[in-house]
Length: 174
Image (tube, rainbow, N blue to C red; front, top):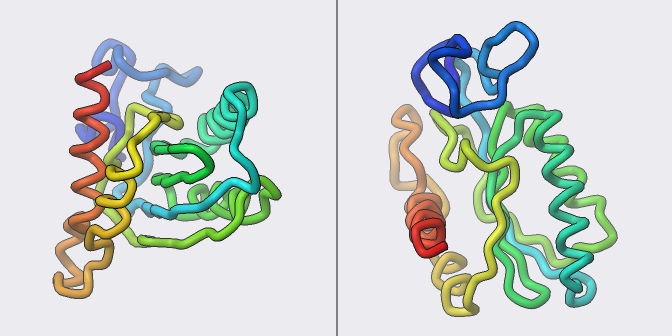
């Protein structure tokens, strides 16, 4: 077993104080050694969301993600969004299907849907940050495929690495 939050193996409560624990005192973000799935997409809201609408959307997503052990981040500017979802393949699929069925989204463009060895945003059930238009543009034009990489390496695409750097800089500035 692997705790994908720490990437250090199955942990006891005393070893994993940073993470929410389940009733057996094991880290609740444990999965088998199977690879995880990560999806990155952009979309537009059908209208620019008010602060209250955005907060409601985030609360709903966080509750679903917590229940299904999905992590990720949502970047937004005006009515434009970029989101990364990561976790067990079936659970990420369920989360992404919710997004695609939502009447609040349109023009969904998928940049990445691939297997990854570990979580990039394991500490976030759904982190959220307002971004500049130029930042979303830079992320949107990054390399998101692994066409030039060997399939067996499971190295993160350049776009995902760039998203992680952007996210870390946002957190340090906060």
